[in-house]
Length: 266
Image 1 (tube, rainbow, N blue to C red):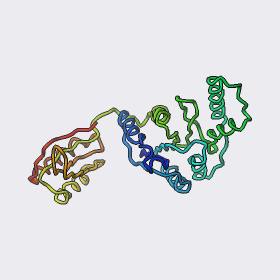
Image 2 (spheres, rainbow, N blue to C red):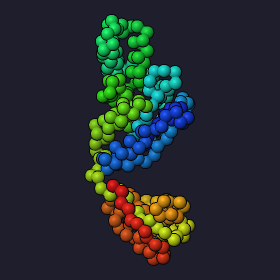
Image 3 (cartoon, rainbow, N blue to C red):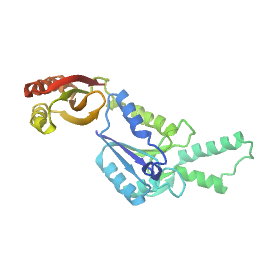
Image 4 (cartoon, rainbow, N blue to C red):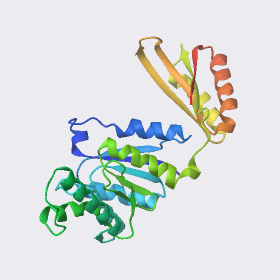
């Protein structure tokens, strides 16, 4: 199962807010021996969100979508999820109870009169529990207002303080079977005195020989420590990783390049 992340919001694309979801999700996955396969940033465009979610639902991937599940005019994710699925929206009964509990708690905390569930403010807040039919809820330990999921596509708020514990819940309560013992994820070496084009045949031969291994090449022209260099490495199948790395290193040395430093990422 591939793992994807969708981050929604004009405020991210405009630079008004800095994204904190991508790095945190990668960290949460790494702690569980998992890796992110893809990520997308989307603005508050209902048609584009719907198209991407339609792909996510059809893919079979584990996908977490962050942002746009509120009830203001610029929040479109709940409606887009329903459109992508071809389903109606409805107020989820358990979500309604959780939102109502939050409304009552806030009124009590602020010293207000007991709230009216039929009042306009209450009805607007209940909109945050309107999900596609058949959706299930994701608990929100910060304020109780839940996210939701359908299949393996999960929807959490844009606020990191809420989203990140909810991501953790998804990984631990819904997909514990994907956890792996944390081990070496990739091995690489800093290569000096070679060009990417010259090393391409070596990279192709490693991938052809070692099933489940990907070779990566990250060139740099102005690194403060190594100057012009290539970080050349392998990642993928743990059972093949060590052998693939040794073959890669031997090929680099046979080529006549200099190996400056060897790196291991866990």
